[in-house]
Image (cartoon, rainbow over all chains, first blue to last red; front, side, top):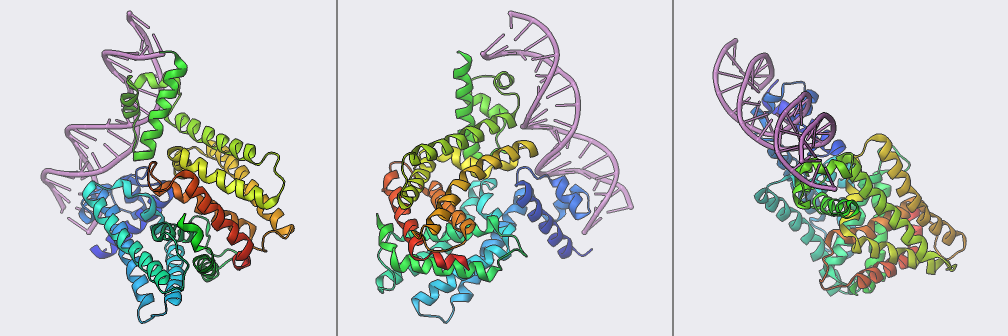
Length: 197
Length: 197
DNA sequence: GTCTATACGATGATAGAC
DNA sequence: GTCTATCATCGTATAGAC
Protein backbone atom coordinates (compact mmCIF):
# COMPACT_ATOMS: atom_id res chain seq x y z
CA UNK A 1 0.00 0.00 0.00
CA UNK A 2 1.47 3.42 -0.97
CA UNK A 3 2.26 5.63 1.98
CA UNK A 4 -0.33 8.33 1.35
CA UNK A 5 -3.10 5.73 1.39
CA UNK A 6 -2.11 4.12 4.68
CA UNK A 7 -1.51 7.49 6.25
CA UNK A 8 -5.08 8.45 5.43
CA UNK A 9 -6.39 5.09 6.65
CA UNK A 10 -4.67 5.54 9.99
CA UNK A 11 -6.11 9.02 10.31
CA UNK A 12 -9.60 7.76 9.51
CA UNK A 13 -9.38 4.99 12.09
CA UNK A 14 -8.06 7.42 14.67
CA UNK A 15 -10.97 9.79 14.03
CA UNK A 16 -13.45 6.96 14.61
CA UNK A 17 -11.77 5.89 17.84
CA UNK A 18 -11.05 9.34 19.24
CA UNK A 19 -14.71 10.17 18.62
CA UNK A 20 -16.05 7.02 20.20
CA UNK A 21 -13.70 6.50 23.14
CA UNK A 22 -11.74 9.72 23.48
CA UNK A 23 -8.08 10.48 22.78
CA UNK A 24 -6.58 9.21 26.03
CA UNK A 25 -8.73 6.09 26.10
CA UNK A 26 -7.58 5.12 22.60
CA UNK A 27 -4.30 3.24 22.29
CA UNK A 28 -1.86 3.09 19.40
CA UNK A 29 -2.45 -0.66 19.33
CA UNK A 30 -6.14 -0.18 18.66
CA UNK A 31 -5.45 2.28 15.86
CA UNK A 32 -2.97 -0.16 14.34
CA UNK A 33 -5.41 -3.04 14.61
CA UNK A 34 -8.14 -1.02 12.93
CA UNK A 35 -5.70 -0.07 10.17
CA UNK A 36 -4.57 -3.65 9.60
CA UNK A 37 -0.90 -3.08 10.51
CA UNK A 38 1.37 -3.52 13.53
CA UNK A 39 1.58 -0.73 16.05
CA UNK A 40 5.21 0.06 15.34
CA UNK A 41 4.29 0.79 11.71
CA UNK A 42 2.16 3.70 12.86
CA UNK A 43 5.36 5.55 13.70
CA UNK A 44 6.53 5.43 10.11
CA UNK A 45 3.56 7.68 9.22
CA UNK A 46 3.17 9.80 12.33
CA UNK A 47 5.96 10.59 14.72
CA UNK A 48 3.77 10.29 17.83
CA UNK A 49 0.22 9.85 19.01
CA UNK A 50 0.00 13.57 19.68
CA UNK A 51 1.18 14.34 16.13
CA UNK A 52 -1.75 12.30 14.86
CA UNK A 53 -4.19 14.26 17.01
CA UNK A 54 -2.60 17.54 15.95
CA UNK A 55 -2.96 16.59 12.29
CA UNK A 56 -6.67 15.88 12.77
CA UNK A 57 -7.32 19.11 14.64
CA UNK A 58 -5.32 21.29 12.24
CA UNK A 59 -6.87 20.01 9.01
CA UNK A 60 -10.36 20.16 10.51
CA UNK A 61 -9.99 23.78 11.57
CA UNK A 62 -8.26 24.79 8.35
CA UNK A 63 -10.98 23.17 6.27
CA UNK A 64 -13.67 24.77 8.42
CA UNK A 65 -12.23 28.27 7.98
CA UNK A 66 -11.65 27.77 4.25
CA UNK A 67 -15.24 26.59 3.87
CA UNK A 68 -16.57 29.67 5.65
CA UNK A 69 -14.45 32.06 3.56
CA UNK A 70 -15.53 30.36 0.36
CA UNK A 71 -19.18 30.65 1.36
CA UNK A 72 -18.87 34.36 2.10
CA UNK A 73 -16.86 35.29 -0.99
CA UNK A 74 -18.58 37.84 -3.17
CA UNK A 75 -21.51 38.42 -0.80
CA UNK A 76 -21.74 41.85 0.80
CA UNK A 77 -25.18 42.13 2.34
CA UNK A 78 -24.60 41.69 6.07
CA UNK A 79 -27.74 39.75 6.90
CA UNK A 80 -27.10 37.43 3.98
CA UNK A 81 -23.47 36.99 5.07
CA UNK A 82 -24.59 35.97 8.56
CA UNK A 83 -27.15 33.54 7.15
CA UNK A 84 -24.48 31.93 4.99
CA UNK A 85 -22.03 31.79 7.88
CA UNK A 86 -24.49 30.07 10.20
CA UNK A 87 -25.69 27.72 7.49
CA UNK A 88 -22.15 26.73 6.55
CA UNK A 89 -21.10 26.31 10.15
CA UNK A 90 -23.97 23.94 10.87
CA UNK A 91 -23.48 22.08 7.60
CA UNK A 92 -19.77 21.51 8.21
CA UNK A 93 -20.36 20.37 11.79
CA UNK A 94 -22.98 17.84 10.74
CA UNK A 95 -21.13 16.56 7.68
CA UNK A 96 -17.89 16.15 9.59
CA UNK A 97 -19.45 15.40 12.94
CA UNK A 98 -16.69 13.23 14.33
CA UNK A 99 -13.78 15.51 13.49
CA UNK A 100 -15.51 18.63 14.79
CA UNK A 101 -16.47 16.84 17.99
CA UNK A 102 -12.82 15.90 18.49
CA UNK A 103 -11.75 19.46 17.69
CA UNK A 104 -14.13 20.75 20.36
CA UNK A 105 -13.21 18.30 23.10
CA UNK A 106 -9.67 16.95 22.75
CA UNK A 107 -7.47 20.03 22.77
CA UNK A 108 -6.25 19.03 26.23
CA UNK A 109 -4.31 16.23 24.59
CA UNK A 110 -1.90 18.75 23.05
CA UNK A 111 1.32 20.16 24.44
CA UNK A 112 1.35 23.88 25.25
CA UNK A 113 2.90 24.99 21.98
CA UNK A 114 0.66 22.82 19.84
CA UNK A 115 -2.39 23.92 21.76
CA UNK A 116 -1.43 27.55 21.24
CA UNK A 117 -1.33 27.02 17.48
CA UNK A 118 -4.72 25.31 17.40
CA UNK A 119 -6.34 27.89 19.68
CA UNK A 120 -5.08 30.58 17.32
CA UNK A 121 -6.79 28.84 14.39
CA UNK A 122 -10.02 28.60 16.37
CA UNK A 123 -9.83 32.24 17.39
CA UNK A 124 -9.30 33.28 13.78
CA UNK A 125 -12.49 31.47 12.85
CA UNK A 126 -14.47 32.98 15.71
CA UNK A 127 -13.21 36.45 14.79
CA UNK A 128 -14.99 36.18 11.45
CA UNK A 129 -18.29 35.74 13.26
CA UNK A 130 -17.50 38.52 15.71
CA UNK A 131 -16.71 40.85 12.81
CA UNK A 132 -20.00 39.94 11.16
CA UNK A 133 -21.92 40.72 14.35
CA UNK A 134 -20.05 43.98 14.92
CA UNK A 135 -20.57 45.17 11.36
CA UNK A 136 -24.23 44.17 11.51
CA UNK A 137 -24.73 46.19 14.67
CA UNK A 138 -22.89 49.20 13.29
CA UNK A 139 -24.97 48.99 10.15
CA UNK A 140 -28.21 48.82 12.11
CA UNK A 141 -29.12 45.38 10.74
CA UNK A 142 -28.77 43.80 14.17
CA UNK A 143 -29.68 45.18 17.57
CA UNK A 144 -26.95 46.22 19.98
CA UNK A 145 -25.41 43.50 22.14
CA UNK A 146 -22.22 42.05 23.55
CA UNK A 147 -20.32 40.82 20.50
CA UNK A 148 -18.24 38.17 22.27
CA UNK A 149 -21.10 36.64 24.22
CA UNK A 150 -23.31 36.71 21.15
CA UNK A 151 -20.66 34.92 19.11
CA UNK A 152 -20.18 32.24 21.76
CA UNK A 153 -23.94 31.73 22.00
CA UNK A 154 -24.30 31.43 18.23
CA UNK A 155 -21.39 29.05 17.75
CA UNK A 156 -22.38 26.87 20.69
CA UNK A 157 -25.96 26.64 19.52
CA UNK A 158 -24.91 25.65 16.01
CA UNK A 159 -22.29 23.17 17.15
CA UNK A 160 -24.74 21.47 19.48
CA UNK A 161 -26.55 19.82 16.61
CA UNK A 162 -23.47 17.66 16.14
CA UNK A 163 -24.13 15.90 19.44
CA UNK A 164 -27.62 14.63 18.64
CA UNK A 165 -27.73 14.58 14.83
CA UNK A 166 -27.91 11.13 13.24
CA UNK A 167 -27.55 10.86 9.45
CA UNK A 168 -30.66 9.41 7.85
CA UNK A 169 -32.91 10.63 10.65
CA UNK A 170 -36.05 12.71 10.55
CA UNK A 171 -34.31 15.94 9.55
CA UNK A 172 -31.74 16.54 6.82
CA UNK A 173 -28.62 18.62 7.29
CA UNK A 174 -30.22 21.42 5.31
CA UNK A 175 -33.34 21.31 7.50
CA UNK A 176 -31.30 21.71 10.64
CA UNK A 177 -29.12 24.42 9.15
CA UNK A 178 -32.22 26.32 8.06
CA UNK A 179 -33.74 26.07 11.53
CA UNK A 180 -30.65 27.50 13.17
CA UNK A 181 -30.20 30.14 10.49
CA UNK A 182 -33.71 31.46 11.07
CA UNK A 183 -33.53 31.26 14.86
CA UNK A 184 -30.24 33.13 15.07
CA UNK A 185 -31.13 35.84 12.60
CA UNK A 186 -34.35 36.46 14.55
CA UNK A 187 -32.39 36.58 17.76
CA UNK A 188 -29.85 39.01 16.39
CA UNK A 189 -32.45 41.32 14.92
CA UNK A 190 -35.06 41.17 17.65
CA UNK A 191 -33.71 40.26 21.01
CA UNK A 192 -30.05 41.07 20.70
CA UNK A 193 -30.38 43.96 23.13
CA UNK A 194 -31.18 41.43 25.84
CA UNK A 195 -27.70 40.00 25.47
CA UNK A 196 -25.90 43.21 26.31
CA UNK A 197 -26.67 42.80 30.03
CA UNK B 1 -8.67 12.63 59.81
CA UNK B 2 -12.19 11.14 60.06
CA UNK B 3 -13.24 9.18 57.05
CA UNK B 4 -16.02 11.48 55.82
CA UNK B 5 -13.58 14.37 55.64
CA UNK B 6 -10.94 12.60 53.60
CA UNK B 7 -13.57 11.10 51.34
CA UNK B 8 -14.77 14.61 50.54
CA UNK B 9 -11.20 15.86 50.07
CA UNK B 10 -10.48 13.11 47.56
CA UNK B 11 -13.66 13.93 45.69
CA UNK B 12 -12.77 17.62 45.58
CA UNK B 13 -9.29 16.92 44.27
CA UNK B 14 -10.69 14.54 41.67
CA UNK B 15 -13.15 17.19 40.48
CA UNK B 16 -10.31 19.68 40.00
CA UNK B 17 -8.18 17.19 38.08
CA UNK B 18 -10.95 15.63 35.99
CA UNK B 19 -11.97 19.16 35.00
CA UNK B 20 -8.47 20.29 34.13
CA UNK B 21 -6.96 17.19 32.54
CA UNK B 22 -9.87 14.86 31.90
CA UNK B 23 -10.80 11.56 33.54
CA UNK B 24 -8.48 9.25 31.60
CA UNK B 25 -5.55 11.63 31.77
CA UNK B 26 -5.82 11.81 35.56
CA UNK B 27 -4.14 9.06 37.57
CA UNK B 28 -4.97 7.74 41.01
CA UNK B 29 -1.46 8.79 42.05
CA UNK B 30 -2.17 12.41 41.22
CA UNK B 31 -5.43 12.35 43.14
CA UNK B 32 -3.62 10.82 46.11
CA UNK B 33 -0.84 13.38 45.93
CA UNK B 34 -3.35 16.23 45.84
CA UNK B 35 -5.16 14.72 48.81
CA UNK B 36 -1.98 14.27 50.84
CA UNK B 37 -2.15 10.49 51.14
CA UNK B 38 -0.70 7.43 49.39
CA UNK B 39 -2.48 6.07 46.33
CA UNK B 40 -3.42 2.79 47.99
CA UNK B 41 -5.34 4.74 50.64
CA UNK B 42 -7.72 6.01 47.98
CA UNK B 43 -9.15 2.50 47.75
CA UNK B 44 -10.23 2.58 51.37
CA UNK B 45 -12.69 5.38 50.44
CA UNK B 46 -13.64 4.48 46.87
CA UNK B 47 -13.56 0.98 45.48
CA UNK B 48 -12.23 2.08 42.08
CA UNK B 49 -11.45 5.08 39.94
CA UNK B 50 -14.71 4.61 38.10
CA UNK B 51 -16.64 4.56 41.39
CA UNK B 52 -15.17 7.97 42.15
CA UNK B 53 -16.29 9.31 38.78
CA UNK B 54 -19.73 7.76 39.23
CA UNK B 55 -20.09 9.39 42.64
CA UNK B 56 -19.28 12.81 41.15
CA UNK B 57 -21.69 12.41 38.25
CA UNK B 58 -24.53 11.06 40.37
CA UNK B 59 -24.44 13.71 43.09
CA UNK B 60 -24.11 16.49 40.50
CA UNK B 61 -27.15 15.33 38.53
CA UNK B 62 -29.18 14.64 41.65
CA UNK B 63 -28.39 18.07 43.06
CA UNK B 64 -29.19 19.69 39.72
CA UNK B 65 -32.61 18.04 39.50
CA UNK B 66 -33.41 18.78 43.14
CA UNK B 67 -32.45 22.44 42.61
CA UNK B 68 -34.75 22.69 39.59
CA UNK B 69 -37.69 21.09 41.40
CA UNK B 70 -37.20 23.36 44.41
CA UNK B 71 -37.16 26.41 42.15
CA UNK B 72 -40.39 25.42 40.41
CA UNK B 73 -42.31 24.42 43.54
CA UNK B 74 -45.47 26.42 44.04
CA UNK B 75 -45.22 28.33 40.75
CA UNK B 76 -47.89 27.58 38.18
CA UNK B 77 -47.65 30.27 35.52
CA UNK B 78 -45.97 28.57 32.58
CA UNK B 79 -43.85 31.50 31.38
CA UNK B 80 -42.68 32.13 34.93
CA UNK B 81 -41.87 28.44 35.36
CA UNK B 82 -39.72 28.49 32.21
CA UNK B 83 -37.95 31.65 33.36
CA UNK B 84 -37.16 30.04 36.70
CA UNK B 85 -36.02 26.81 35.04
CA UNK B 86 -33.61 28.59 32.69
CA UNK B 87 -32.35 30.89 35.41
CA UNK B 88 -31.72 28.01 37.79
CA UNK B 89 -30.07 25.90 35.12
CA UNK B 90 -27.62 28.65 34.25
CA UNK B 91 -26.99 29.49 37.89
CA UNK B 92 -26.22 25.89 38.83
CA UNK B 93 -23.93 25.42 35.83
CA UNK B 94 -21.93 28.53 36.66
CA UNK B 95 -21.78 27.94 40.41
CA UNK B 96 -20.70 24.34 39.97
CA UNK B 97 -18.86 24.81 36.71
CA UNK B 98 -16.33 22.03 37.12
CA UNK B 99 -18.74 19.29 38.15
CA UNK B 100 -21.24 20.12 35.42
CA UNK B 101 -18.46 20.19 32.84
CA UNK B 102 -17.38 16.73 33.95
CA UNK B 103 -20.99 15.53 33.90
CA UNK B 104 -21.31 16.74 30.32
CA UNK B 105 -18.06 15.30 29.00
CA UNK B 106 -16.90 12.26 30.95
CA UNK B 107 -19.78 9.81 30.72
CA UNK B 108 -17.65 7.65 28.42
CA UNK B 109 -15.56 6.72 31.43
CA UNK B 110 -18.44 4.66 32.83
CA UNK B 111 -19.28 1.01 32.26
CA UNK B 112 -22.49 0.26 30.38
CA UNK B 113 -24.64 -0.28 33.45
CA UNK B 114 -23.36 2.79 35.24
CA UNK B 115 -23.75 4.90 32.15
CA UNK B 116 -27.32 3.73 31.78
CA UNK B 117 -28.12 4.91 35.29
CA UNK B 118 -26.56 8.33 34.73
CA UNK B 119 -28.21 8.79 31.33
CA UNK B 120 -31.54 8.02 33.01
CA UNK B 121 -30.91 10.80 35.55
CA UNK B 122 -30.03 13.21 32.76
CA UNK B 123 -33.10 12.25 30.76
CA UNK B 124 -35.30 12.79 33.80
CA UNK B 125 -33.94 16.32 34.08
CA UNK B 126 -34.39 17.05 30.39
CA UNK B 127 -37.95 15.73 30.51
CA UNK B 128 -38.87 18.52 32.94
CA UNK B 129 -37.84 21.08 30.33
CA UNK B 130 -39.61 19.19 27.56
CA UNK B 131 -42.80 19.10 29.64
CA UNK B 132 -42.52 22.84 30.24
CA UNK B 133 -42.17 23.50 26.52
CA UNK B 134 -45.03 21.17 25.61
CA UNK B 135 -47.37 22.65 28.21
CA UNK B 136 -46.40 26.16 27.12
CA UNK B 137 -47.23 25.35 23.51
CA UNK B 138 -50.51 23.67 24.40
CA UNK B 139 -51.42 26.68 26.52
CA UNK B 140 -50.60 29.11 23.72
CA UNK B 141 -47.87 30.83 25.72
CA UNK B 142 -45.18 29.59 23.32
CA UNK B 143 -45.33 29.16 19.56
CA UNK B 144 -45.45 25.69 18.05
CA UNK B 145 -42.14 23.89 17.56
CA UNK B 146 -40.25 20.64 17.87
CA UNK B 147 -40.14 20.00 21.62
CA UNK B 148 -37.01 17.81 21.62
CA UNK B 149 -34.93 20.05 19.39
CA UNK B 150 -36.07 23.10 21.33
CA UNK B 151 -35.06 21.51 24.62
CA UNK B 152 -31.63 20.53 23.31
CA UNK B 153 -31.10 24.04 21.96
CA UNK B 154 -32.13 25.65 25.25
CA UNK B 155 -30.03 23.36 27.45
CA UNK B 156 -26.97 23.61 25.21
CA UNK B 157 -27.18 27.37 25.08
CA UNK B 158 -27.44 27.64 28.85
CA UNK B 159 -24.72 25.12 29.54
CA UNK B 160 -22.33 26.88 27.20
CA UNK B 161 -21.76 29.71 29.63
CA UNK B 162 -19.89 27.24 31.79
CA UNK B 163 -17.10 27.01 29.22
CA UNK B 164 -16.21 30.71 29.12
CA UNK B 165 -17.49 32.05 32.46
CA UNK B 166 -14.79 33.17 34.89
CA UNK B 167 -15.85 34.11 38.44
CA UNK B 168 -15.06 37.72 39.22
CA UNK B 169 -15.26 38.76 35.59
CA UNK B 170 -17.26 41.49 33.93
CA UNK B 171 -20.62 39.78 34.37
CA UNK B 172 -22.11 38.17 37.47
CA UNK B 173 -23.88 34.83 37.47
CA UNK B 174 -27.22 36.62 37.77
CA UNK B 175 -26.37 38.85 34.79
CA UNK B 176 -25.65 35.86 32.61
CA UNK B 177 -28.69 33.96 33.82
CA UNK B 178 -30.89 36.99 33.09
CA UNK B 179 -29.46 37.32 29.58
CA UNK B 180 -30.22 33.71 28.77
CA UNK B 181 -33.61 33.84 30.43
CA UNK B 182 -34.69 36.76 28.27
CA UNK B 183 -33.18 35.40 25.07
CA UNK B 184 -34.84 32.01 25.41
CA UNK B 185 -38.26 33.31 26.43
CA UNK B 186 -38.19 35.62 23.42
CA UNK B 187 -37.19 32.73 21.20
CA UNK B 188 -39.94 30.49 22.52
CA UNK B 189 -42.62 33.13 22.20
CA UNK B 190 -41.60 34.73 18.94
CA UNK B 191 -39.54 32.51 16.73
CA UNK B 192 -40.38 29.08 18.03
CA UNK B 193 -42.26 28.21 14.85
CA UNK B 194 -38.95 28.46 12.99
CA UNK B 195 -37.69 25.50 14.97
CA UNK B 196 -40.41 23.13 13.82
CA UNK B 197 -38.77 22.78 10.40
C1' DG C 1 -7.27 4.81 58.14
C1' DT C 2 -2.97 5.07 56.30
C1' DC C 3 1.29 2.96 55.24
C1' DT C 4 4.97 0.08 52.32
C1' DA C 5 5.54 -3.18 48.93
C1' DT C 6 4.24 -5.38 44.96
C1' DA C 7 1.54 -7.84 41.27
C1' DC C 8 0.66 -7.54 36.59
C1' DG C 9 -0.87 -5.78 32.39
C1' DA C 10 -0.83 -1.99 29.04
C1' DT C 11 1.21 1.98 27.22
C1' DG C 12 3.99 4.96 23.90
C1' DA C 13 7.95 4.53 21.56
C1' DT C 14 12.49 2.55 19.46
C1' DA C 15 15.93 -0.83 17.09
C1' DG C 16 16.95 -3.35 13.50
C1' DA C 17 15.71 -7.23 10.13
C1' DC C 18 13.56 -7.79 5.70
C1' DG D 1 6.81 0.26 4.40
C1' DT D 2 5.99 -3.23 7.39
C1' DC D 3 7.59 -6.64 10.42
C1' DT D 4 9.26 -8.86 15.16
C1' DA D 5 11.21 -8.01 19.41
C1' DT D 6 11.92 -5.25 23.14
C1' DC D 7 12.33 -1.22 26.43
C1' DA D 8 11.24 1.69 30.17
C1' DT D 9 7.46 3.50 32.36
C1' DC D 10 3.23 3.99 34.27
C1' DG D 11 -1.45 2.42 35.07
C1' DT D 12 -5.05 0.32 38.47
C1' DA D 13 -5.51 -2.41 42.06
C1' DT D 14 -4.36 -5.68 46.07
C1' DA D 15 -1.91 -7.74 50.42
C1' DG D 16 -0.68 -7.21 54.71
C1' DA D 17 1.81 -4.45 58.46
C1' DC D 18 0.92 -0.88 61.80
